[in-house]
Image (cartoon, rainbow, N blue to C red; front, top):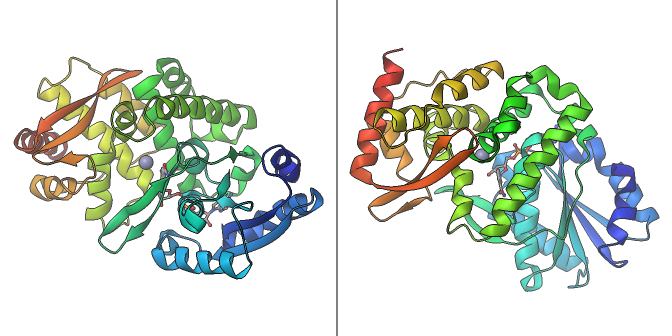
Length: 342
Ligand SMILES: NC(=O)c1ccc[n+]([C@@H]2O[C@H](COP(=O)([O-])OP(=O)(O)OC[C@H]3O[C@@H](n4cnc5c(N)ncnc54)[C@H](O)[C@@H]3O)[C@@H](O)[C@H]2O)c1
Ligand SMILES: [Zn+2]
C-alpha cells in the first residue's frame, strides 16, 4: 500500500503541501517510498524528522515542527502526514491540532502498537517533564493507511507492545478473537494474512468504542484495562519495562485482585495468564504494594478520591468500576500478596 499512498490521499486532500513527520529510523526505511508516491500524485512534500524514541515526544519537538511549518508557509489548506509509531503519530497530530488553530493530518502507522491502537481515535499529545501524555488534544486523522508489510522490520520486543493491546481488546470486547489468539503464538504474527486479520479486528473494535465516546468520558475508558497498574510498573521500573510487558502485568494483576476481592464474578484471570504466557510475556515484576499503589494514583483515570478501574466480567466483556482509593489500596495489597506468594 505504501507505494500507493499518493493515490489514496488524493481522494482526501486536494493537491497541497504535505509535511511528512517521522523519526529518523522510520524515515530512513520508508520515507523515500512515501515521499515518491506523494510527489507522483502531485503533492509538494516537506520531510521533518527527529531522533527516534519517547524522548523526542516533547513540546520542544512540537515547537520546532510548528516553526518549520510556518517557515515553509503552510496554510490551512495544507496537511501533515505522520509516518511512524505512536511517537511521530501523537506528536504530529498534536502539532496539526494547534498549527493555525488546526490543520488536517493523516497517519501511516509503522509499529503494531500504532496500527492497532494509537493511529485510531484521535488522541494526540506530548510528554511533560512531570509525566507522560500530560499535554494534548483530540484531533481525528482524516485518513489512516496501514500497510502490515511495514511491520516486518519491527524488532520482536516492539511487536509485543502491540500484542498486549490486542489481548486487551480481546478481553474487553471479543471472545472469538481471544480464542483465535489462544490458538496461535507470537510466530503466527509473521503470517501476513493472520496479522492483517488481527489488525483489522482491533481497528474495528477500537473505532467502535471511540465512535461511542470520543472524548473519554464513558465507554472509551474500557481501553484503559490493565493500564493503571501498567503505568505504575512503567514508572517504578524507571521506564525500563516495555509498555507491553507492563500492561500485560497490569491486566493479569487487576483481574486476579478483582476476583479475589469479589468485585467481579468472572473467573477469567487464569485464561488471561495462559494467553499472556503463550505470547512470551514474562509477568515478572515484583514491587512492594505501597509503591505500586502510590505510583498508580497519578493515573489520569483518578478523579478526586476515587479511581476508575476496568474489570473483566468474562472474556469479551468488561465494565468500568469506580472505587474509592481506600478500596483501591486494599485491592493492590491483596493483588501484591498473590504475586509475592508465587
Ligand atoms: N494516541 C493514542 O491513542 C496512543 C495509544 C497508545 C500509545 N500511544 C503512544 O504511542 C507511543 C508508543 O508508540 P510506539 O511503540 O509505536 O513508539 P515509537 O513511535 O517510538 O516506535 C518505537 C520504535 O520503533 C521504531 N520503528 C517504528 N516503526 C518501525 C518499523 N516498521 N521498522 C523498524 N523500526 C520501527 C521507531 O524508530 C522507534 O525507535 C507512546 O508515546 C504512547 O504514549 C498513543
Ligand atoms: Zn497501551
